[in-house]
Length: 194
Image 1 (cartoon, rainbow, N blue to C red):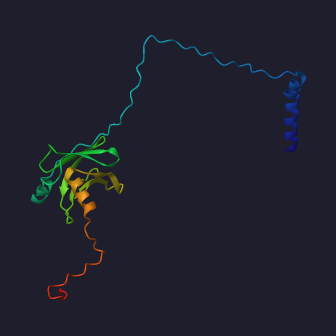
Image 2 (image 1 turned 60 degrees about the vertical axis):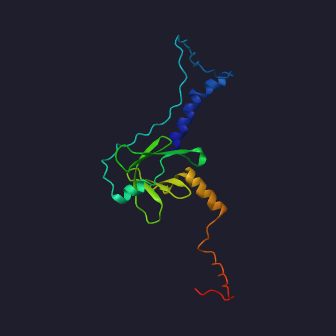
Image 3 (image 1 turned 120 degrees about the horizontal axis):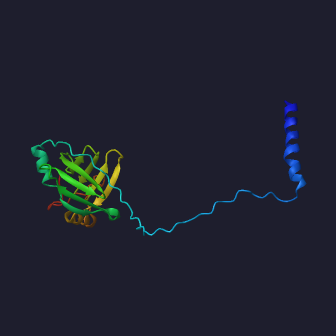
């Protein structure tokens, strides 16, 4: 093995290094880069416009007729264009696909929503295919992704919700954690019994 390495070193010295040692001039590159030729085009190319992504929504499934409770909830949904936080907008419109259904548009997405009954008093619209929920509370509305577990759009308010939110700031409701106020004394000076 050592003999083989020694033979290789000797071959290198015989062929390559003595030739370099005989000439004291630096080695010049024999390959010259190709000259670039640019042909002038007679056409003027227009500037490219930025492309906005278009999200293709799946076709609307056949809609199931809503029950009486859902149709009553649908009457309470605020329809129109709502300003939201971070300068975003949400538009809620009645759907042409059936009574009680809604189309919710934000950015370049459209959701097909149906009302769902709740026990909390919140108005809830769901798009089960896209896995999103629109919650309309007394003081704001929000779009929540069930899949991601976070709010997509928050603090969307119609004029009634803005007024209610201002009233909440001016006259906050008592918390369930606050101590109860002392009962007022009666006309005889005794404390009223509960």
